[in-house]
Image 1 (cartoon, rainbow, N blue to C red):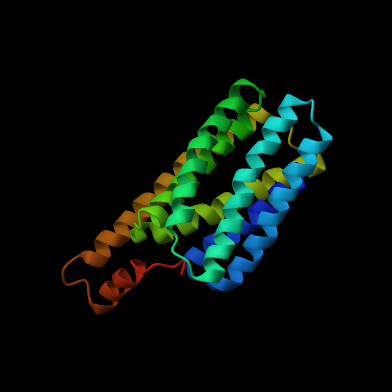
Image 2: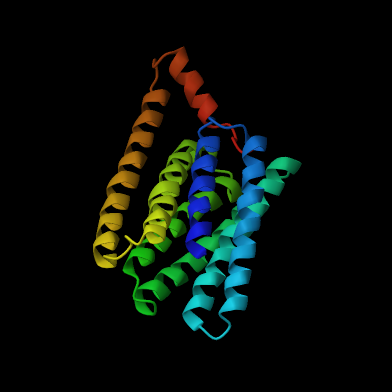
Amino acid sequence: MGAVGLLYVGAVLFLNGLMLLKKVEPRAAAIFNLFVGALQVVTPTVLIIANPDVPAALLNASGLYLFGFTYLYVGITLLGGFDSTGVGYFSLFVAIMALGYSYANFQLLADPAFGVIWLYWAFLWTLFFVLLGLKREEITRYTGWVAAIQGWVTAAIPAFMILTGYWVNLGLYALILAVFGLVVFIGLWLLARQRELTATTPGAGEGSMGAHDDKHRHHWT
């Protein structure tokens, strides 16, 4: 059942990434955030009720609430036009807890693949904190790309592999995910920095400066 919820976490991360990239209107994305947020609250509740004496199941289920509350919070904030600071600082809490869940997957659950995936999520929720809590809007596009990519590599694809019985070589998947994350997210950051430097170079032209100004607008409201 957890894998079913994870599949739709992939969908909402992809959608939220597109929202930050200005491909999806925020209020339209808000509806799906509420759907997935509700699912990610119901799912762990059912898992906990069904496995009250299984510590590993309780540990895994408890982490799902972090996502459920995030998406409910995002959906309500977008629909209500509220300030994003609350979501941002809750994201800091999620990022810190994600480090703990990463450790638990490496050391207690013998699942290095999800140990790496939790590190991915710690990184993404840190970006949400910086963007929404600290209002550093210059990372909006970068955060959008990271969210959209993570929707596939940390959620949708692993969930589908679990559901079809192919999530078996956990050590290999952990290595692939670690290398992929370092290469792709560092590469994206370098490209984003290069784009920013190009846009702010004197004499870059009116069009470039316009793109630079647009990049600094807040895309969640």
